[in-house]
Image (cartoon, rainbow, N blue to C red):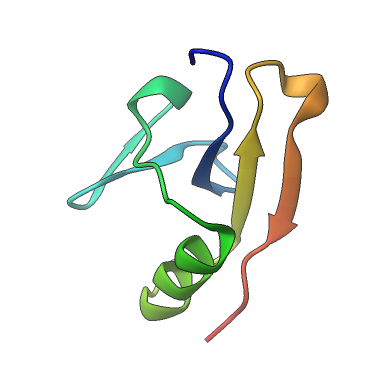
Length: 72
């Protein structure tokens, strides 16, 4: 991940990451990145997906920051 942070959406139950175009992936590197946490939250609110977390990944899971995405 080039040492930079990446903001993505993850399904809390399946642990799959949102890839875009109705696709999910177990691979963080394939996940659709968002520029800002607010962008990820806005996108999550516009979907019918339940149980989403916004994950800010720093390349090592022990440093990940997880936020519950806002419900509609």
